[in-house]
Image (cartoon, rainbow over all chains, first blue to last red; front, top):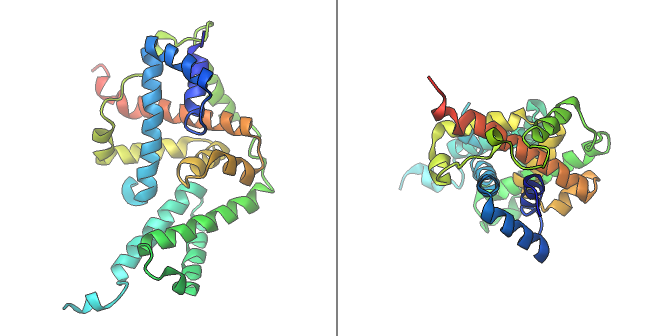
Length: 63
Length: 199
């Protein structure tokens, strides 16, 4: 079974490449049981969105 | 008709774009002098190629596309002289911090479990969030930040990032994972838990 540590690697890589079917299945089974990793997944998506918005409007950060 | 409407580009608008360009370049390059130089270069290139603009996109999109290319050229040149995959002490600390979040069975320690960050839109709307996000980005070690920003900020495919910086895909994955962990920990500490601290 996938550990949380493994799951963080797959969740990061999912931002960069298409996961294989077996990777996806293992991940989904893990996420169904693990709230921490489910949050981690949402956090990864959040980081991407935040970077995208910042690139569109770099003045956001003030100064 | 106001006089300003007759002009294609007004100075205030251009000034705003230039400021944004410098900010953008600085976020990627982390060096004020380099950021100023690359923006200058991009603006000159834009003037030289004014015909290329032809209103196909907004002026801002167009000059930013030129700026991105200039930044990548610069990174490409620099990557010949620096070893991106070399680990600094800071990066080693980040890896240790990451490992320390797990029990021996590689599952989360109870206190380290990632929390629910709530509604992302709500956070992204908040003014102060962006200062915290900026600080967390700056907190990333240089090489880690460089790879991460190329991927997420310049929006290159991971394969392109690896190619431009001459690093292997698995190395790229390790670096991106490190950056994302560092950022999420920083945000969790500095922003998302701020409301829950005991008095």
